[in-house]
Image (cartoon, rainbow, N blue to C red; front, side):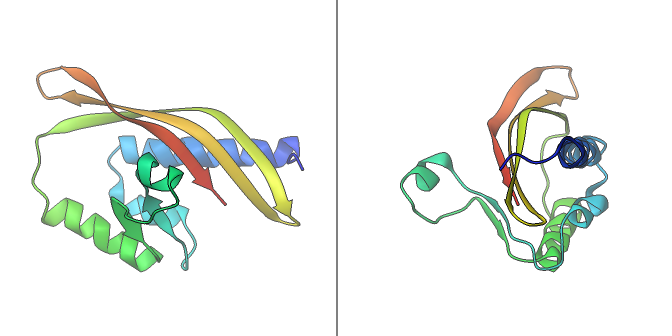
Length: 128
């Protein structure tokens, strides 16, 4: 069943605030968009389409996401770049009373310190 306009607006706003936190490099805010017993995965399309596991990133709690942030900030060294997320086609359905499923498309552009921009990733967010 399609969600109400009010719920849809809330989910769209949540998605926009989520990517803005990432684009602004407010990594400590990232886990706060999730409940404590969340599940966050980046699943390669090839694996998903074949029903296979094998994730690029797998976090099964907010605590695990906080550890991921610590790793990004203190351990991982990478080329300096700036991200910009674009989200479109956000669709929201009520799957049971008070529980909503949302799907949206995303594109992440990365710009180097030298000003060269490329498409880093294109995919789909699937949220409950």
